[in-house]
Image 1 (cartoon, helix red, strand yellow):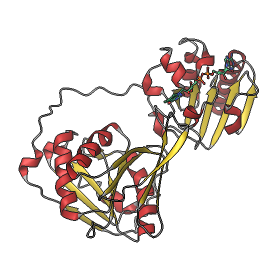
Image 2 (image 1 turned 60 degrees about the vertical axis):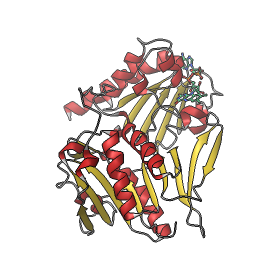
Image 3 (image 1 turned 90 degrees about the vertical axis):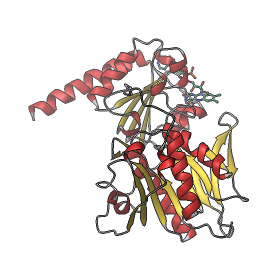
Length: 337
Ligand SMILES: Cc1cc2nc3c(=O)[nH]c(=O)nc-3n(C[C@H](O)[C@H](O)[C@H](O)COP(=O)(O)OP(=O)(O)OC[C@H]3O[C@@H](n4cnc5c(N)ncnc54)[C@H](O)[C@@H]3O)c2cc1C
């Protein structure tokens, strides 16, 4: 327990390119590392990582540990967790955090089991307890009705995954300097029993939901799948992506990939338009950090108005066509300028 030190973040790559969402972890990691007065280390496994390794330093890491091996190009969880176990046992980080993405949600539990330490999945906030150096891991529990605070007092590293989309990545500062280490690991660890048979693209939209500046979301008030076409049209006009409440997904009007909320995705766009969404606590958990929230609902007492910056009380079947018309006219005006 005594010899552990440093804060690690697990970055993700695809085809040798760092996934943009990984940089969000540096915001969480930097805060924790500063509070613990410890170095912040970005760890990344993959192939062809040399060109991007410095980007972690520019965004706040003090050190990068990369394992650059062709067999790691594909995210095989057995090989990745074995390599991470090797690195953790060698360097002994005090805290190790990752994103609650499919990759990290698979690899981190396998790693926690190997290391016999705790892991809190899907945290919405992380902090450090003064005096004890314990990581305060907060996540919704009991259907989102309470926020649980979890600590890992008896084992190290203290491990957690955090929801993507909850923090903005730190700005790049190309004057920052740090250490980049390409580690060699025993070849036996690179072997995997998992074979990549194909890759299916997420067809949510041209712009990934969690990276969109504008999200246009619909709920049960949309009444059917056909009316979601209006939301796709608005999203296209605003260069955004389409989201949905769980009710809309459960009705089969739109796929799960679009679901926003506690059991869906977390987004923090500049503009979030909620049409026919009541504003249940589980939905709000996934969009409340949006910069501007516009709600359209026929019920003036709908909960969504409590978090909205602009509220329109009325029938969405009247309001959305008017919005489409106005956006098209605006677009034409801009074309003429
Ligand atoms: C463990 C758990 C996890 C959950 N995870 C999620 C999650 O990830 N995401 C999520 O969204 N929910 C989640 N839920 C479900 C959540 O509790 C709500 O049931 C859901 O968010 C409600 O969806 P909704 O707002 O579309 O539907 P409703 O609550 O039925 O609201 C529909 C709204 O549409 C309005 N409306 C109807 N017709 C019109 C019209 N013509 N014009 C304008 N407004 C109209 C109504 O006034 C109403 O406010 C979860 C629940 C649990 C228990």
